[in-house]
Image (cartoon, rainbow over all chains, first blue to last red; front, side, top):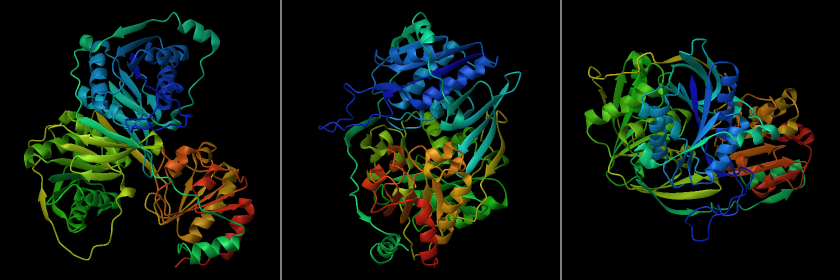
Length: 251
Length: 327
């Protein structure tokens, strides 16, 4: 079985973002970029499944500008066998990304597609669900545990839902999106980083995949959220209770 | 404007987040009709439907899809059902659900079936096709316009659309959806196995009036009882930071923040919470924020209405002793 993992290049999670003065978006010039943390978890899970003997090959895919190759190199250094880079504008909507992934899945025939549950830039939380719909495959979103049966016919997945955990059993091929507590992604070791340099990254274009890109959402403006003004520092529990009672009226 | 809302219900009653979604639907424009779609099976579904009919005066009709296939909220048949209802009942201009784990799971799948881009996590509605949604963990707000020809598919962040009590009572019509032509290619390809929920007497984190949260500074499961005791005293819910969850002090469904629950209570009390941006993104709509931390430089103090620099192990017992009993 082959596992396809979609990885997105995003502004590093530790960077404090700045909204551009012209309100067209968030400044990504000269900002540290990394693999989306949820995608790292997705890739880690695929690698563990391979290491447990359930998969033969892990293929990392990234869709976006040429710098996505860096993200793919990271994925290869973590342990992916090969990578595919689909050259595209970075402003594609999740629906278009889902169509590209669907088209790749038609070519690659993976038994599983792993994605992060959301990207930490646009926070959309849509792509996995949409790929599953387009392929007509079952989906298990927000996974915190994935167990494959020995014949690789189905996966038992714990999902993080409001108020607890839900367990589903889904037939393969299927789409799984990963939540934070599924695993702790590995760091790439230096020897593996060196080895990754010789692993293949295949370039593909939208024409190769025959995907029709649609843009039915327009970004009007991006602004900073209103700042909460900081309040007062109280000096004792008595003063705090007094404020909560007589000023804020909340207790 | 005609809106179809995919409703959530449990044990025979409609969930509060669905009522918030109705409130949001009302803001899409004048003369909007609102249809609530309830799927499920058996008597608890019918009970929920009759309650849904009078949950808000702007609900114009309640559609009921009663079948064993909808016993559990599996994304595959439910997404298909929304498309089926849309084809049967005429074109809706908008299809909505709340941004709960239920809505986030199903609605993007619906949108892909309809070949439209959804707008998820809407916090403000500016017009029938213009919305604001947070990006970068709430560190920026993105104003978007939907320009497609198909229905506009939205998930609604319910804490941004509070339900105000209404006195007017009105009962919407209830109709059963005829499912005889509902083809479902997913039968048994996706199966519900079970659910583990935290049984608790406390109010739900997402809708509680008071939330008391503990961070890693609590140091242990035993110490976290202090947070629980204080929540109990205030009639509130217990929350935790990601660090406290990762350290194993509490189960993960108590996590507050961008990757956990978004809360907007009247009173939010944070103990031993430093205030990582991910956490602040999940609490910034709270009415009053109280922070207690030993570190006077903790970022949480920059957003707190009332800060107290001190040791939580002294402050909480004193609060427990001196706070008035809940009403």
